[in-house]
Image (cartoon, rainbow, N blue to C red):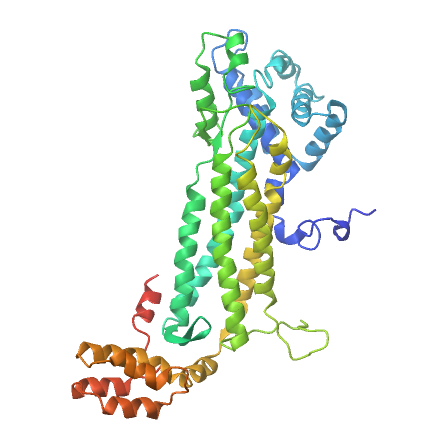
Length: 473
């Protein structure tokens, strides 16, 4: 076997590895270990400031050293933890042992090594593995959401806004049920998607990321047994909710998450389900967009800018396939399948704990990875599009029947009996020409000014407020 990406089982780490370089450090096992180290160090530093007689506050040099273990965490550190896990057969215990080893490594000053040695047993003090894991998962999702997922969606939103404004006045024939319908503009159609996407993004951003640090079954049992006269719940809340970037070196260091006061051994994962459902909703909106753009390319409304050397078909040289939108649709579907399983499964646990969540949670990065990949494909596809105004105009010029709607509406305003039925008789299921409609308009019992207004109307100018609605977003 080779370690080249060609041998990867998942295309996320094979064919598309380079496209997910920003997500991999956050959602991989290395990223998970990094966050575990962060949580263990944060808890340890908080304990040193808790007033426990047996644990004096750390010196400034010890604090700098411990924080540096988090800041400098590398792939080599992750591999070292994996090596320890071969013996422990327990991933969180391996992190604990690695931290203890780092505190006694060669090269530290004798004074620092002595200070740290006296506190080694406070690493992972009173914690269950899930205290470390659930907070680490929340930190992973926090970073992935803010650094990769939302920026990717925002890039698509920026492009849609640009298209909404640029094409606000470019009339386009609508199709409802696949049939010709009242015209819109290309820009208004982009605005429709943009508004939906921004709503979905706000819901993704608004999900609070919860974490608990309350022991084996959520009751602070071990904590109270060690120190009954201490406010452990308030302490845990402070560790979880305090900023992960304090204003000063002496400031309280926390995780920047939201405290979950009630749990079994595991955090209930309801917030995860909410976050994954919100992400799936954004994906679904973009599936809708991908399919619509694919159709517009097929109709000739959009051309795609050519890329030198690119081949559309192995046998048909003329083809320029809408592959970016097809790739986006496929990968969005894969992402949603995984996200929906995560949101359905994770909030369900037998009694106080089972391990079914653990193996499923290892696929959070996969679910998000397919979404991130799709967002990139979609943006790439949108950036290739060029509006084919000739095709848009030709379609409109062949659809005079869509003006049956404004004509019968004006007739009804002026009390012409059977307006709808008259237009239905003339237009339904028939090819309608400009002359047909103008002949009808001239016979109508409506004011002359209204006749002239209807005679001046064309499918391309019958767009209502579409242009202003597109420009407003």
